[in-house]
Length: 232
Image (cartoon, rainbow, N blue to C red; front, top):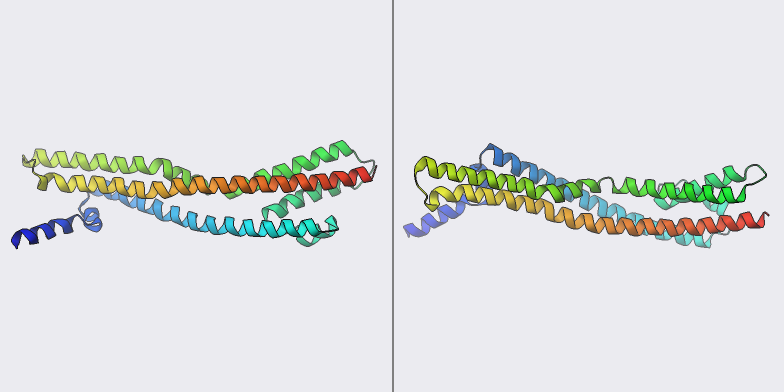
């Protein structure tokens, strides 16, 4: 009966909260930093997943509406002020088109080149703006395991110090420090693994969105190029 109680008491000391309380200030700082990074990582994951999902659905509807439009100028006047990245690509193209064709004679080759440059610059800007918060995921994914490892090394050093101080290498002396050390590593992996998975997944979705906007820009460029040819 006493053995059973002692086992339960020892197991209670190795709960996550108990390990945190038993850790020294350095390991506690490591654990708190990693937990905050994990919370912020999940905040970015959830918010970005919702945002990129909304953009994907709205972009599909935008493309469908554009493909059915008979008057590009009217479509731009109705939809060009939207905050949707694809709408901004359209807006940059139309602004350049109107500036280039406002006065004659029209430099057709120059106009085509300026249209492509304006829309490609807008695509790059919108992708960079969307990807800005993903840099934190990449940082956490690469740095968090090493921060956790630092906590591990520090905890093991404390265990060796306890052995030297008490002249005792029994499990009761060594176990708390090792447990704290391993717990710091676990928190580091808990923060890093979702960050790496999310970063790779979101990077893939951003690449798809960039390709989609590029195809839209190419199609819009072709439409305006035909307008130039009709004006010859």
